[in-house]
Image (cartoon, rainbow, N blue to C red; front, side):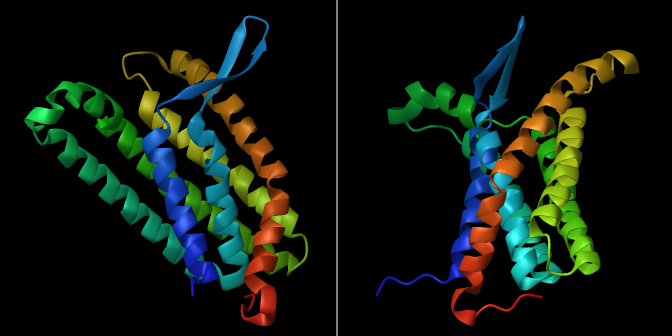
Length: 221
């Protein structure tokens, strides 16, 4: 019989969202136009809030140590993905695939700076999410799941966004004021979009938590 443990599915989905955000974030799509300003976002913006949603769900049901273990596992998978991508693009293509080699390298080729920025931002953002969620739960108890979910997501996603864009795009040959203006124009709308998605996905946290606890087999910490 086809049977999957709930936590196994949730962790697999978590890793899948991380892999999608790493592999497919190079494409952007138009969001809206404000006067002459054209706002776009990476396609990864769709799955990034789901990563934090799953994080909060696991913290709520299984506790902080379990959630931190899942985050560490996710970080190791990112490192493995990046290292394998470097190996895969460095290996020579066989005759049948020489013609598509440039396209392959364009899609899967890695900028060390971008990759390092993504890894550091993800690590800090995810661990901050678990910690803030847990601290709020300690103070408020089991009530107001919506509050600790969004409060932890807003802060952790802000850290993630600021750290990533700063490490990835800060120009050392430009003055601080120029960099600040440029980065603020990227960080603020992108973070606000993440916050908006976090809010509209809040009901999914309740669904996921209740689903894990269904049948009385899961115990909340």
